[in-house]
Image 1 (cartoon, rainbow, N blue to C red):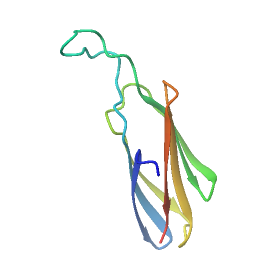
Image 2 (cartoon, rainbow, N blue to C red):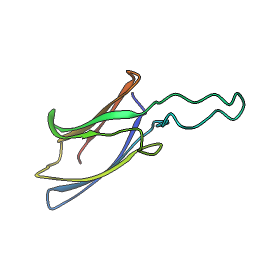
Image 3 (tube, rainbow, N blue to C red):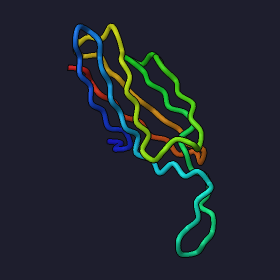
Image 4 (spheres, one colour):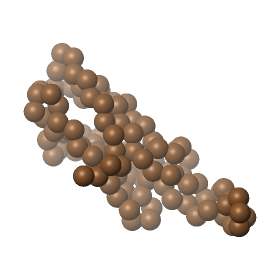
Amino acid sequence: MDKTVRFRVRVKDSIANVKAMIFHPMETGYRRDKNSKSIIPQHFVHTAIVALNGKTIMEVHWSRSVSKNPYLNIRVPGVSAGDELSISWLDNMGQSGSGVSTIS
């Protein structure tokens, strides 16, 4: 199981309040390593996709300006128990991750 995305989903009146955190270092390419003084290369999530039951409901495009461990807070209307909410991401170095939460 992938541990790069953590969810908290609360449902009220068939509207899901979704709080999600993507665990990623999000390096800008401007910082220097404290020991070697060399520049730490850019490493950031550039695309995150939120899907409900396999259908994309939101696509996010970020740049290097987003802080470490990006956080999303979204509201998803029309959900019911058993629906599957997923978030997948891709970074500029080709790494990816995902997380899935079943709405209860």
